[in-house]
Image (tube, rainbow, N blue to C red; front, side):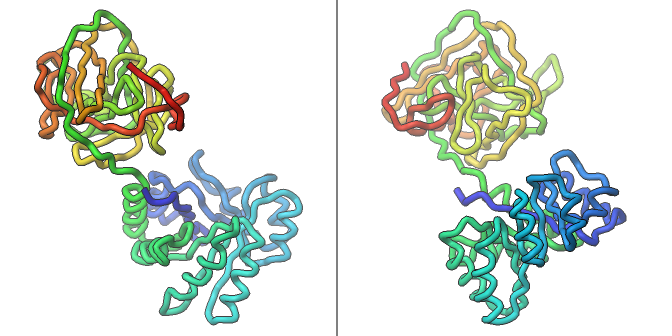
Length: 367
């Protein structure tokens, strides 16, 4: 998995008439926006916005709430901001070797450093990445396009810590956001699980995970009774003869079950809440993050499905009903109530052992 990247958007000078750009930003994962004090006081920004306020004078600084981040090319002003508790971002424009050497020395004094290279080579960026490697300074490269961002992230294989996006081309922003969303999430190694036992598990509480997103027929979530892995339970996107589909939902299973999340975490269904993040997966193992909008729990008849991935035993307990779908190893859905021993389902295994959903290295036996 690639490291998490900082993405800042430079909104200075971008008027409200640029609605196509602002709309893309507002509906993307980009939440760190550089604005002028005037923009901040007069403009509308979503609740998610983390303001980076560009300052040029003491008066500008005085108008920024304590503890926030300020941005400037004025080092004395930023040093004053540091002394009064602000986070600071410094801007450098590098045109030659002397400026490059001075840049990395000064950059290490601040929380963030944004650098603009007006040069035909990436060597200056490579040198600054190497110089700042053992510091706490977050290095951002100023970019005007997706291609420039891709180069910045690939330089020295490690790449810059992030990018400061400065463009009025909405299409370039869309390409960048899509690339980062895809690159920063894990691809799960899904494997066949041979079903060994299917039994009725009596009545119990099962949970539906209703998300704020829309899933496809190729998507679902990893659900399991143990921390060593789970089974691909499908989204509610497949034919139902008596009711409308619910493409935002996975009828996940018994309330004790784990659901896999970003960052290799797993959470009990009973602990998921509105606003929780869950991992949506497709049959290729590609993942994306969805937000929980509601957890819907009810008492229903339950079905225990046990199986083996190699010599590893897994199980999942789902609602015992025809309309619950579990993904087959061949990429075709199976109706839960029609699964039989010998069938192969799509599953995910990982190292067992979790405490409050977080991976731990200790001996934990789950049966």
